[in-house]
Image (tube, rainbow, N blue to C red; front, side, top):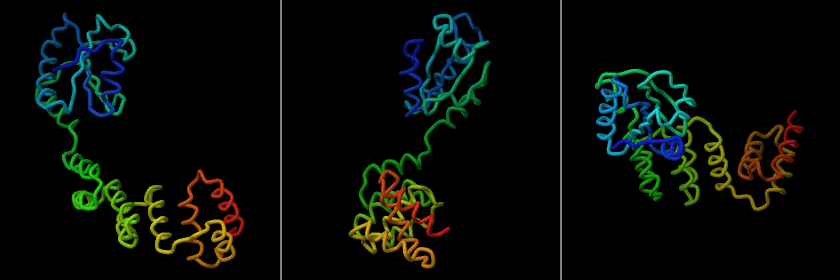
Length: 234
């Protein structure tokens, strides 16, 4: 069932809804001949998705604000919203097979849906199942690695992380994992001690960086010790 959207409801019914569900916006009018062909095709294709893709209809005669905002010059015009933004669209009629292909392309990936379900469960078994299903999925691998660090499996976590490109999240988890293998009671004292060795001792330099990564950018000590490290190295 299509939504009848107005100037007043567009933000909630299209923009906000598209943050979780793709929305196809059909700009039409009762007097438009091609609209009478295209709209039923859009309705049939989106109805078949059981709510995974939504159709929103905008009567351009009754909602001139939206027509002006989107620069609608002819109808039918279709605009596709995902993530709160227009991402694609077309003007004029399209055959049924093209519309069906377009709608299918908007459907969520079944594997990703299952991975998200497993991640939401949050148990070690479900996280391992998620990684087995999507071995290169950063969220799955990082979630399992974080769990392993918390439960004493830091070495396995580090092995898992090697399959991913280095990102801020990967780097932070790896640093936390390495530090959990060699816990530090007092960061300030340890950083001060390590600073004397960082120039010529790669292991000391890595531990120094791991502590900074674990403390994070919001800790005022991080900026202070990064400056001291730079001064020592260069």
